[in-house]
Structure formats: C-alpha cells, structure tokens
Length: 96
Length: 384
Image (cartoon, rainbow over all chains, first blue to last red; front, side, top):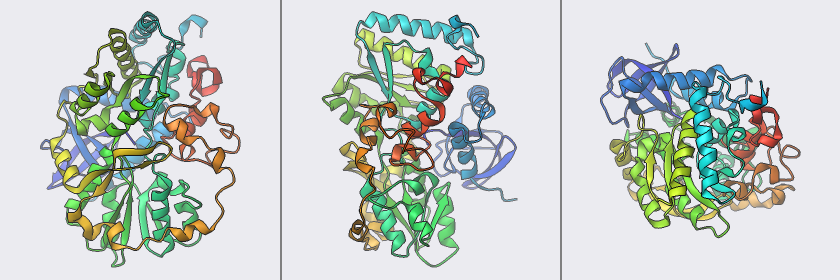
C-alpha cells in the first residue's frame, strides 16, 4: 500500500508505542521514525512501523481525510477502506 | 443533481468551491497546452484508488489522461519471484507474506494454491509479525518480502533488530524511481509528467526525483491522497507542462520534505542494495529490485535454501495467460477496458493476471469503482 494511516500515541516503551486508531489500540514500532515520539503525538503507521511524526499543525487535516475515506466505504469490500483497515490491523496487538 | 454540477458533491470534496475552481483551472490550462490528449502518469495504487473511488476522472477535462503506471507492488512482482516463494512452500518451508501476495499467480501456481495442497503459508500484516512467528518455533520461517521502498524500510528495520536464527527473508522488494526512467524512455510513451506518491516520498524525500527531472526534463509533483490534494497536484503538473519547466514540486509538505526520513533511508540501504531485475510486464528495470546485501547472507533465503523452481514448470500454464495484458496496463500503455478478459474471465474471485489480484491493481480498482467516466456506475459517483 502507498498509504500510511494516522494514529495517536498513547504510551511509549523503548522502541514500541501504543497507538490509538479511532478507538482501536495497537503496538507500533519506532525503529524508523526520525523524530522522538511521545504520548499525545500523532504518527503515520505503515505495516506496523511509524514512518513519520505528523506535525501538530497538520493533524486535523490528516485525520479528516482518513475519516472521510473510512466513513464513505459504502461497500464492505471498498478497497481504500480495506487498505486503511489492514494498515491498522497490521500493527501488533495491544499489550497492557 | 444538475448536469452543470460536474459532480462536486460534498461526499467527495470537503471544499466544493475550491474543487470547482481547481477543475476549471485544470481545464483551461490543459486547453492552453494545445496538445490533445496530455498524458500524466501516477505510480501509486492508493492514488488510483482515490481517483477511481471519487470519480475524479469524470471531473477532469477530456483532453487530460491520468494513467496509472507500475505502482502496484504486488502486480509488478514477477513470475519467477512468485515461483521462488511457491517452490519453497512446496518444499515444506513455512512462508509468511502480505495478504495480497497469496493469490498472485506464478508460472502455474500461487501461494494460495500451495496452501490448498497443504503448504504452510501465513498471512501477516507486518514483517514484525513474521519475526514473532519465527520466535515461536524452531523451524525456519521465510518472509516473502514484497512492496516498494516504504515497505522495504520495515523489512530493513526487522533485519536490523536481531531477529531469531530461523527467520529468513526472500526479498522481492522494488524501488520506484528507476521505473519512472524506464517509462520515460519507452518509445510509445506519451507521458509528459509524473504524479508521485506522498507517503513513499515521506521516506525518500522529494529530492530523489531531481536527477530524474534533470535527465528527462519531465516535471514531477508529489501529491497527497485527498481528492482535493490530487486535483491540486494535477493542476500544478499541468501548469509545469504548459510552462515546459522541468521541476519537482512538493504539494504535500505536511508529510514530505526534500531529504525525507534519513533514519529510515540509512536502515534501508544498510540492508538492501539495488540491482537490476524484471518487473512483471515491464521487463528489465536497472536498480529496480532490492536484494539483501552480502552481510545478511545468513538470513537471505536465496543463499540459505536450494530453491527448486524448475519442478514447478512440469505443469501446463493457465490457458488464458497469454491473453492477459497486465504488462501493458502496468506500463500505462493500455487500460483495463482494452483487455478482452476484463470483467469476464478475469474478475476478482478468479483473476487471470496480477492486476486483478491486488487491492492496488488497476484492474481490481476499475472493477470495483469503475475508473472510466464512460463506464458509469461507480466511476461517476457524482452521477448518482
């Protein structure tokens, strides 16, 4: 997929972050993101790895786009929504 | 919905006024170029999904062609590479791979076929999950690694994170910038500019396109995924074509910088080296394939296993294979509607070619959303 999916960082433990994607919490790896990431930050997830910390000023616009894409999945097999959902699933299971 | 509306429903654009303005500018500038059609290529499955899903082609001027090029990582994974994964699975080795790869046909069989015969093929959403699977047992696990550079970064990170000794990588990763060169050099190409994928550029930076632009004098615009972002990207690209200027424009500054993510790049090139290789349908792309460097031979499946592909070729190939024009579609020379099999013998639940298998394949996308304004239906969401 070309698409990374945004999520909110809830907790960080070394190279692992717990990230919230619209209520679903997943483990995302931090090996490749090029800025320090803290709780409250938003990151772009691609196949379970954070590829970018989204600048705070850009978060709302980014989230709005994805919410639009997910909301208007009028068919269950909508390809864009499926790719976004599989990016969310791609992250590791929540561990707490 | 009135005929004058041109489909600017709020469903599609958060700012219909801006969308209309952009669309009118696009039509005017395309006319000013004076050639018809003007062809632009994008190389990203998610761009095609957005274009098709939101019926963007219906809002474009008739004399502007926006073509999907070889931007579906699953589709361009060549038959011999799929055969390697299939052969390993048939030899009893456990394979983990991304879901889309499982149904892609090799010479004869796909990984799904081998799975049906009892082969062990695990679908993972992340390479990190494959590493976890390897940790849970002592038997070898080969991760069949597909995807472009954004995805290869994740594989590199996994390799660098001290995976267990029974974890191996069969790399079929690809690198996009070199294929743009190939397309630009194709004699039959009419492509006058490229729309580049926003998230891949998050990693590589937009600077990666500068040598291409200098060599081929074709403009590149990096665009995001919202319909409005894509439209704005197209406007900028057409403007550059009209000016005859060769430049890289970053229309996605929220995610893309010139240098990109240096930490990710460092890991990528520490683990992988680019070599020439075949892309399905495009033939040879110099530096287009990513292979593990020699330092990683110990987890390179090609070094550690004797992969016997020859045995797969005892079977007769699928009868319809020779009618499949996926290669031409991926090169942007033909479109799905040019294919005699599209929507008839070749449909998502029984695909003939790779383009119909992957969620990023042009044929799959057009089949789902419709891609062509004249097809009606989903292609013209605005018309409903």
